[in-house]
Length: 125
Image 1 (tube, rainbow, N blue to C red):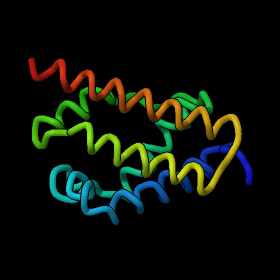
Image 2: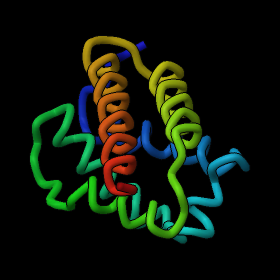
Image 3: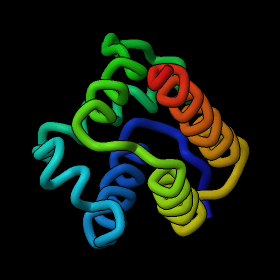
Image 4: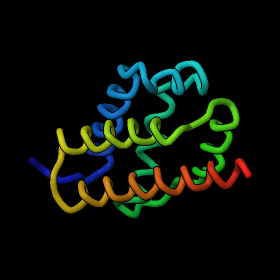
């Protein structure tokens, strides 16, 4: 099994990841009802984000924290939702890739989930 090497690999990863999320009734409502995500528009943005984070390509300019705080204002993003998100993300990585970048992206996803939960908790105060 190959490691993540380029944006095509990342596109495959986020596509498989979102298929997992959207088929899970415990979390899919966030994307279908709360945010009403248009997946075909969202996937290239995610590829740009992960490409910047993992491959150093740059190009992602959105405020990731603010996006999640805005979603949380509509629907509480609980620790359980982050756990589900992370489990699906890690599964998508492990089912398709292995290697240094694969481990790096899983660590980065854990870091993001952790920071988002801290920011959400701080925003409640």
